[in-house]
Length: 277
View (cartoon, one colour):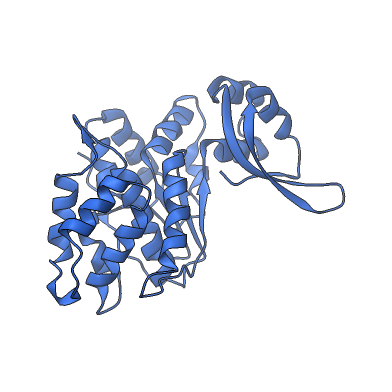
């Protein structure tokens, strides 16, 4: 298994990317086709992968080689273990805060939420079990497990981590999640809403943005690093896309609709087309 340094937010960091498994696979495919993906990461001071997501590709020699390639090219990639998430919170209330963050990030996943309320949450915060212990138990005995698959574990991990960075590290300028997974996008949006209504009033200080596979294709196309024929060969036949278009009068309309390969190809040449997810 690849050994990554442990992530610790540094005061000099301004731009951080979080990598989801689905995007790692997509980036590998781009690299195999001769496109240097390091160019997508040069702006970031650090690229972070939660431990659970890293464990999902631990048996893939090709994925590990790809990450090693990025590291050799000067991209700083680090790992953040879920059991140590509370250590990233600079507050004496970190034990209660990390539970709030896990509850908010699990809002769409009822079985995980039920587990947290039944087995972790206490009326008195002083009775809370050490988060290093209950988080390990949560992932070891993931409530949404089918065979070897622990459904939505990665989504919860990346959402909790993104919100820790957004709330407690206001010196950051961008926090971007590389993910093509709608559950990750929805989990993050729901967490943002839930956190505003917690007793601790946990509000994002730094916006959390996404780069889906479509976003990355458009970014590469805009830089002249990929052509339409390759995009058409790689892109899904049809996919629902959330995007903005600037209209003739300068107003902006947000649309969410299924985009075919042909529609996407045509939109790539529209300078007023921007992808949200």
